[in-house]
Each structure stands twice: as C-alpha cells, then as structure tokens.
Length: 318
Image (cartoon, rainbow, N blue to C red; front, side, top):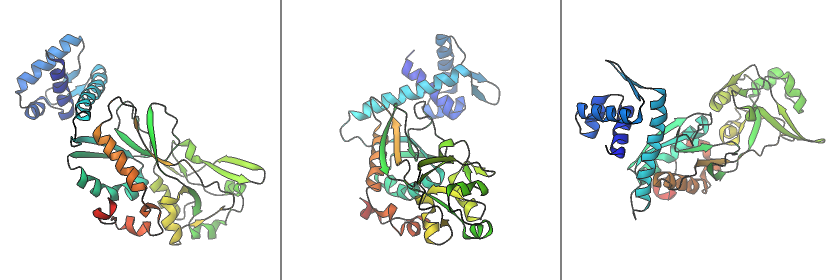
C-alpha cells in the first residue's frame, strides 16, 4: 500500500467527515476508500476512526495521526512548490487574527491580497487567545503580544501604544483618576485569561511601576472591552489603533496620560520555523509587511477608512 495515498485518503475522510463524500472528492468508490482505511489501520495496529451508521469520529490515536498526516502532506506540497520557478501560491491559508484589530485593520486589506493571489483560499479565525501554530492550529498569526517562543519566526509590522481611557459620562459619575492608586476605587475593565494585558504599567517619580488591575467586569475580546468602555462601564487600557478614533471623536477620554507607559509589545506576524516555507505563507507575510510600511494605517483619517470598510484603490496600494 502506498503510504502517501493512504494518508491522502485518510485525511480526506477526516476533512469530509464521511466515506462517500471523501470518495467523491478523490474520484474513488466508497468501498475503495473503506478498504484503504481498513488496511491502514491494520498496518498501524490501531483504530483511527470510530464508525457508526450515521457518522464517523476520530479516536485519540486517529486525532494524533491526523495532525501528523496534515503536516506531512503539507510539507510535501510545500517542498514541491518551493522549487518550482514562478509557481503560483495556492491552497488553504489559515490565519489567526486578534478580534478587534483583525476586523478593523486586516480585513480591509484582504480584497487586495485576494486579487493578487486568487488561488489562495483564506480561512480566518478571529480570537484574542494565543493559538498553537507549532501544532497546526493555524499557518500564520498576527499578534499584539510579547513573543517568547523560539520555534516561531517573528516579523514586526508596527509599533503599538496603549492608552488608558474612559467615557466622559463615566468620569463625570465617578471622577477622573489623578494617580495610579486612584484606579483602586474605579472599575477597570480586564481581559479574560490574558494576564499580561491586565498589568498596567506606569512611570512615576519613584520609577517604573506595574499594577495588576482587578476587575468585576472582564471579557475575552478587546472589542467587547472597547464597547463596554463606550457604554460608560469602566476604565480600559487598549491599543491606540482600537480606541484612537473614539478619543479623537470625543467618545472616550484619555486619563493618567502623564504617567501611563504607553509603549507596548509591537504588532507582529508570526509563523512556525519550517525547512520549506509555504509560498502562501510567504506571500501573505510579505503582503502584511508591505501594507504596514505605508502610512495609511496610522493616519488621523484611519477611522474613516476602516469604518467605511475601504482602503485606497488597489493600484495605490501596490
């Protein structure tokens, strides 16, 4: 039995969730697919799939094998593409994006990217959680966080500033904090399960100070925190890219500006170290670096462009 064929058939069954659908995709008969899976399980000495009359599911061993097979077949495809001169990047590209930042800045760029590389299929996952790139949860990720993983390649896209702010009506009701200790008497909006973002840093006369805020209101999404702040629910510390438009429009007001340590971890794009870098990953990373080298994303008019869901015409972005 050809191992590559068996892997391909197995992965098709996993992705389609059905022998018949996998057979149609591979232009085989369902019985041929079933026989190949049976021989594969016999050779490995384990059951990979649990079969029922209505569905199939992966066993623990099958789930582990599926992850390895996906990586092996992907590496084989990428190795072949990498040595083909002028080969068009193609295939599915799984991108992990921070929720608010991804919607506001990355999504408006994508029509241009798709126009350049129509053979690439994009799968976007919006989450403020750190996904495991090494184990294949995504191919590439944009992050606004410190990078300490030596198994990842990091390319800086842009600097990042965090601003402490609140809605004017909240400050009218609760008063404006004049020093960091005043925050203990306020509602500070925190991010769930992201301890680093709940440490607010200050430069005081006595030196640098890091204060871990405690909050009765937390959310797993920075966009949710922004909306809570706009609703007058508390004080928030978020990237200027997220709250800058609200501050310029008067919807939010910065506080503790003289002591807030605004500079934070830069915005970066990260991907796993690979012997053969996928052409689709490479062109996506290069595209982001190119776009963030332009001034549009950090301009005073950014909010109008992003809110409208449009950017300068494609020709102007090349």
